[in-house]
Image 1 (cartoon, rainbow, N blue to C red):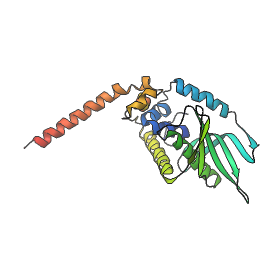
Image 2: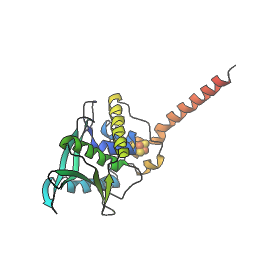
Image 3: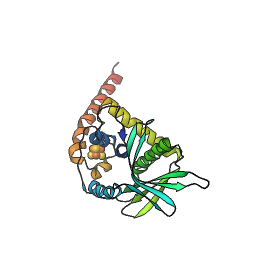
Length: 218
Ligand code: SF4
């Protein structure tokens, strides 16, 4: 759902985009620009399987597919691919979010932040601690356990705050300086980072020249 004002909840998926590139998140969630490339198309197919919903019991734990999540505190909303509810000895359950991803684990923490945001929603909704979740990657066909430590929680909350600020200001950020990310970006054609970056570079050059002139002045 596109964001039109700061009262709209920020989609959990926007945090994943925001960690990858704040401009990408703004283009998708505020300007409503979207383009499928091979990577995102594969992702849609993968999520279509999880999006069927329903719940079932297996190996002593409860699994809920396509579970709606929200956090009032962070103004977030979205859907978890799957949440397992692990029984606790003596009563109660520990939620354990599992997110399906295409490809394999990546160096940036975009997938981990999206999963951690789900955990923060689950903690607010259930009152239970959510210490860990998992990412399931289609290419490796393996689960990667993700502990929700203080560092990841901090990065997730910072990303939510950055996204909220962009929505409140309504200004799409400049291209990422991590240009290697542009090559795999589904919005490369619409974003045109080189064209957009040129005025920024020219502006910076003018500022440097002006500062140099001011410093040299008697
Ligand atoms: S092309 Fe690069 S700068 Fe533009 S949205 Fe994608 S990652 Fe960001």
